[in-house]
Image 1: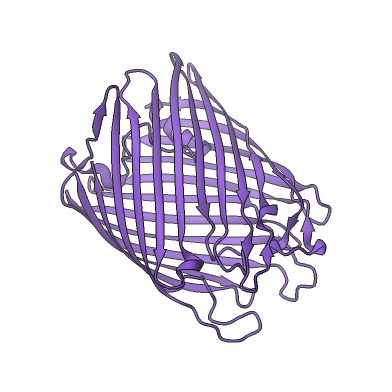
Image 2: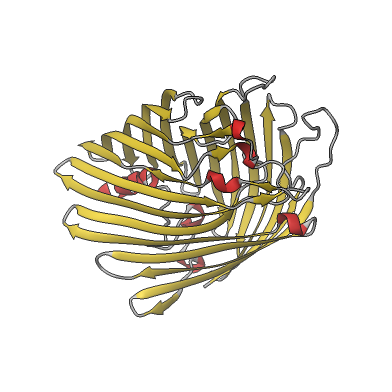
Length: 432
């Protein structure tokens, strides 16, 4: 029982830790062992290669509004996109301790304007679990990612192509249990390194000024009220440190350059429970605050909280729900940060052992803290909606396919910054 609680704590405290230590088993993996990958045994390790070929139709590849900020109509190009996704996981088979490595890639090829849209994303992570003594263990993760930023991000406009960046991260968690009390000190570090972007006119957007590091140590102390129920207190300290002054949207205008270094705290209290493996949840509420070095950037504070729920409604149907509220970074002129409130729900139903139906949706409200100098549109507020439906068919343990449809919509009070997008995907996955 307590191991499940620790997994919940890991999911909330170390969000970047991958599940490479064990075979990935989500809702869809409730199927019998005949559909699970077995891998190839290499001594005390298991090699699990995979490859996904994704066919996608994107109705709005630039995430554009149908009108510009000046009120003029503009095109919203669509495209067929081929995604090639080779990957591999290597997991240890030891009785004590654990070690895992995982590599995922997404090599995207666009038919429409490929020179402005193609990207090659790479995700890597190495995870380890060290059993120190009884009821005491250390979990760590080292990761490197090479990624692209969504074309819908307000922090990268006017670029002829996507903004590329890489991250280097380290996450560590030490768990120690004394009778009914569990102590979980953690440390999270991530370094973001952004690349400059060219515009259609040949000028350069200084996106590299967004490069920064984030440090986030935390301490969670929990008490087992009774089996399956645990109350906890948690404190998180966060520091963001930028390499230099940050230029708004990469434009080299000294009037829109800010020192975005900041520090803040998040105090949380909550309850974790696991009821007969049917309902697993972690619920918390708290208060967070963030202060910025630049006097032009106002501090942010307010109530926040998190809900992470997994409810197995029946043996064949599982519901996942999440609620979160946190402060996110931004580079908008005059805006210190944005308070993001998100809600998501997803349902997975096992129609047959090898046929799964999926339905989900989410809503995110982004409230920007501050107003750009000279702005006539006031404080920016965005509402993002998304929904998806899909079906997955598992032919055998080596081959599966799925078809899905998703939509996204951003509604905002800033003219010319909303968008609608539809995405149809047909995936073929092979694994061993």
